[in-house]
Length: 268
Image (tube, rainbow, N blue to C red; front, side, top):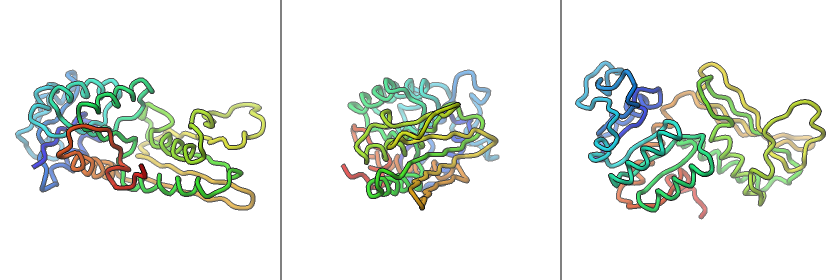
């Protein structure tokens, strides 16, 4: 039985992860974590489902991880990095779905993988990761005179932009064209921008309402256009992918992996 700890337990994603974990025959909810100032501290982790659980929401990360096999974390970068250090001390594997990391913070995750096994991905959805492979295929075979634009939409509470998924899409396509995303990304357009720079990858961002996550990539050539889209209608897809990642980490002692590894899609 794989023992699962959930960070951000009182948030929307945390609750989705808890519910998904309870439905698994090969997993048990071992801990539910939240910030010390959360009003949910001390409450049953499953109270939102109308049932009581022996697991209460706690802010004691060290104690929680000492009796857990995998921590699943979809919080904020600062919180995730704190949890990462606790995971190293407890020798606990971690699945990280948090986005908005700086390059320096990403390096900290990479360094932690020298001590514990980590799945680190901007999107845990199986569908999104299949979409990434489709984008790689399109970028590889379409001529470079096809312009690439990425549009993404999320709810009005999301704090980072573009989304981690949109960035991952851009990185995949830029790398396929032999570039780094930073070299070709067009983040904003305002005023007299002049003609489009050939080979650039444009980004557009929408933040509104309760949109869970939409991503559309346009490949626009002369006389034809290809659109590859992924739209999420439920956070359950992220939860199911996260649990698959947790199973993937079982038995591993260290290493940095992503969802392409989990799904057997990695070409490396």
